Structures are given as structure tokens and as C-alpha cells.
Length: 259
Image (cartoon, rainbow, N blue to C red):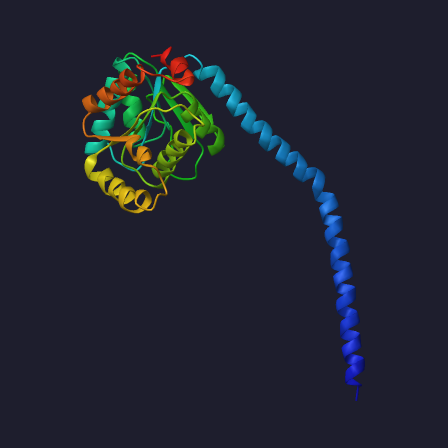
């Protein structure tokens, strides 16, 4: 019969050897993988830079522009699709290029309306496994692999945001726009929420939860205006800049050169 102490010592020796072997193999794998990993990361960064450069070259002359967000899932027969098309057309005829995500649903409707109008219709398309397919109503079409560079393009060239009903992606774009303006990282500009029935509950929740607990300032809520018609959307955008023209900041004076 084997001595239990001997067995325990052998097992501990085995564990020690296994740990040493595993550490050596791990270091070897890391050494082997390091150049390949760095190369992949470098190409990833270069890919993002390339998307920035292409966006800058192709969108430099579209200002003033309005970015329109909304669901890819709303069908062509929906009332929201028809309204987004009307908004896109009115903005285009009023001198604004219209920027959308370039896909179906609200994005297609906004591009379709702008495509029929006087100003450029722009699509910032993204490669996704589901939902995203480029719509045909684009004067300028860019294709992105990275959400990061696409988000920058939505913000950089916009003089206003129009937010139609949508899901998580739309909420993400709205929150990002509010945060950038709140923190002064981008000039103050109108954020128009389209559809009182859809948005009023969210605004009420912001007031009752965020505002009452001082998580946001009263002015943060006032950054958003709710509209129900295409005419109201265009009037809200022009009205914002008419009021700001009285006491514009330096960044706003630069923006108004395009308006």
C-alpha cells in the first residue's frame, strides 16, 4: 500500500510541473501571436482612418445637412415611412442635404424624399449581418465597416438631428447627440423628435427620473423639441438658428456660414 504522504507529494510535483509547462507554452504562444496580433490591430486602425478620409473627401461640400435617424424595420406602408419621406423632401427643397444610415425603413424614406428634392441625399451604409441593405435613393453613398467612424460622419456634417421612431440603434444615436451637445464637444443644434405618441413617454420619464434627481439639467430637456409634421420639423430647425443668430457662439457663427 502506497504512503498517502508520498502520493500527495507526487501530485503536488505533478501540478508544479504542469503549471511550469503551461506557463512556458503560454509564453511561447504569446510570442508567436504577438506580431500577428499587432499587425491585425494596425490594419484595423488604418481601416478606420481610411473611412474618416473618404468621408471627409466626399462630404466636405454637402453642408448644411440634417442627419435623420429611425428604424430599419418600419415597412414602406407605415405612416412613419410616409412622414420620413415628406421630411426628407422638405429639408432637401429647403437647402439641406439629408444624411441617413443608407438602409431600409426610415433611412430609405428619408433618402427617397431627399433624392426627389433639390439637395443631396447621403447614405452612410454599414455592414451588418441583418437588416442592412443599401437603398437606391442616394446621390452620395459611403460604406463603413466600423460604427465609430460612421457615427463621427453623422455628427460632423449635421446642422440638426431629426429622430424618428426606432429601436436601440436610434436610442443610441439620440443619446450620443445629446451627450456631445451637453458636454460641449459639438455645437448646440436642434434635436427634433418626430411623433408625440412615440416620444412623450420618454421625455416624461426623463423629467420625473433624471431631472428630479438632478442627473441632468433643465436645459438638457429643452434641447429636444417634439414635432408631428414635416412642416413643423423644418420650422423648428430654421427657428432654432433664427433665435441663436442673436447671440451666437464662435462655433455657431462658423456653422451659420453654411446656412
